[in-house]
Length: 71
Figure 1 (spheres, rainbow, N blue to C red):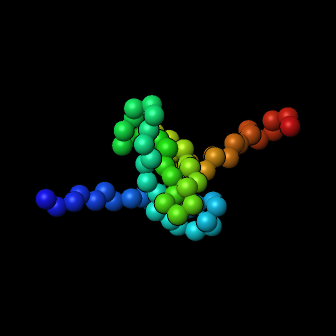
Figure 2: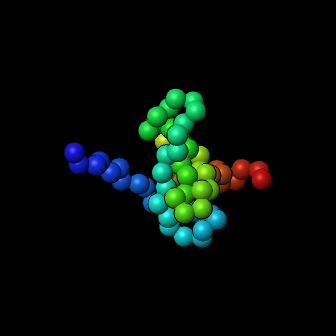
């Protein structure tokens, strides 16, 4: 029977200092593969990842004051 391998995401590991493979460790809360915690395969550093967070935030729009308005 063939062994199934799951692709592991690569992320920046703050302890290793570069891109590393991360995996989902066994979750005591019962989240399974949807658990928001990832662990570095090399050093074990845990990252808490919010799957609903935007990947990039838009730059804030500059505000304008009306001409002649008091500062």
